[in-house]
Image (cartoon, rainbow, N blue to C red):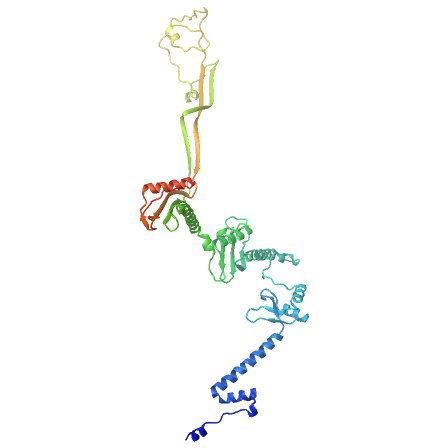
Length: 462
């Protein structure tokens, strides 16, 4: 029975004469013993390895291409290709990035050929070099003004494109024709389109700089007449026009910087005394940013000063008395004469004595001057006028006061201090005890000995 079982066991292949089988035969034998799926996978892997090796060999034999220009934007592609073809320089264009690639050995020679042919990358903006071109004899004034405006737009676009975040720019100027009539006068305006790099933006300060740059380059151009737009259609000049919000942001930043500075000073005072993480300090500053200007004029009536004085004194004596009757009666004929009712001395006393004639009394006798013994004469009419003008100057003082912005109205400092930690040197146990006024004053004195300013600090136990 044992012999029958032994006869049914398959015989193992033994090498003839004790020699090992060949590598190929053993591989084929092992391959034949594998399942169909494993045989297909092994053949596919073998084919892939052969293809990869063949591709590596071909890639290693290809020439090394380097980018001549990162992009053909702003260049005449046909002129570039014709120049390279005439110089027998092989090239290729990257389909994804549009970069112009040439062999590494031909890189310097290709650049020299293109520079000799006048093919250089440009931004596409035409500046004042347009004025260097020859103009025809019959060029109109309109064409000259248009060329100048086009050149100015190109120069402004080049200047704006030199900013770090700006990839390209275009400027459009609307300059109206000047008029001799004031009512027909129109102000110029401008529009600026900026193309930004991917992932970058312009700060409000940079937008204001672009607006000022364009406004100062065009005569009579106001800043409010300039519009700045990016390539996505976002209006950037609107941020610059909102000056109130910009000023509010600057005031907020100033307040935060002042509070941070004062908080750091509090840290510098308390950290040597209490240690790290043993206190919390906050500072709040109330700052007044209002701009106030006042002008005061005061007079002191107790200190008058005589500035000028003018005095006029006139006295005039006429040799002849007034003639005729004043008023309209002098232009009328005299009325009929009437007989007098009285005679003699009464007539003499009532009559009018002419100036320079001797004076008579009621009896008709001449009046004698007792001092000279001569007859007294009737006086001539005299005019006398006296005028005085005095100008006084009062003491006056004028003061103009302009208060500085950013005045500190109130400063609030809050400090929360942890309990005082004491260590028993005998057993090393730590105990917490609240701060007492005596200990706190000693700590402040320690700070003063080191020339550290100590603000008002509110203590509390954490």
